[in-house]
Image (tube, rainbow, N blue to C red):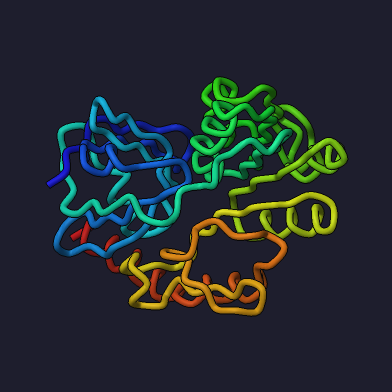
Length: 273
C-alpha cells in the first residue's frame, strides 16, 4: 500500500495528491509518468508526474476529475492509501541546452510541463512558460511555474486574467526567437501548437492516450508517428509534434466514452444506495 501524504484542491475539479513511494521518487525524472490503481476493484490508469522529492520519498501528481477512478482518487485524504503505484514509466524528457525554449501548458497539462521547465532552466536554457485555461478560476500553478521559468505568461480564453486568448495567441508572437517548443495539454491544443510551429520551430509534445499496462503489451496507447505505429508507454511519452497523427489519436481517445459514462452512472447509484 502507498500512503497519501497530502491531498488538496487546486481549482474546481482539479486536485493535487502526494504519494509516499520512495523507490519511484528515487528513479523519477522530468517527463515520466506512473500508473496507479486505487483498490482491488479499480482500473489501472496513468498520471504524469508533477514533481518528486527524492529525500522525502514522495511523488506528486495533479489531475482532473473526469471519470469514476479520478473522482475516487480525488476523494482521498492524507493518511489514506492506494493499492498500486507503478513507475517511473516512459522515457525521461531529453534535457540539454537548446537555447531559448517555450514551455506551453494548457489546463491540466501545466503540471506535466512543470518538471520539464524546471530541468531545462537548470540546464542553462532560457525558459519562457506559457500557461492557459478557460478562465482565471481554472488557471493553476502560476507561482510554481514562475519559480522554474525565466518568464511566465498566462492566458485565459475569456480574458479574465492575463492575455485574452489561447496559448497559441501568445506563442505565435515569439516563434522567431525560439529554438524549441514543448507543449502539454488537451489534444486539440497540442495539435494547434504543432500546426502553428510547423516548419518554423522544433516542437515536442507529451502524449497521454488510453493506457492499461504501461509496458507495451496491451497496445492501447498506440499512436501513429511519422506514419509508423508507436506505443506511448514505451516509445514516449514525448514525440515530435509535427509527426503525430492528432486526428487519429483524438478519435481513439473517444473509444470508451460511453463505458466511462456508464461506470460513473453505476457508481452514483451505488453511492446513493
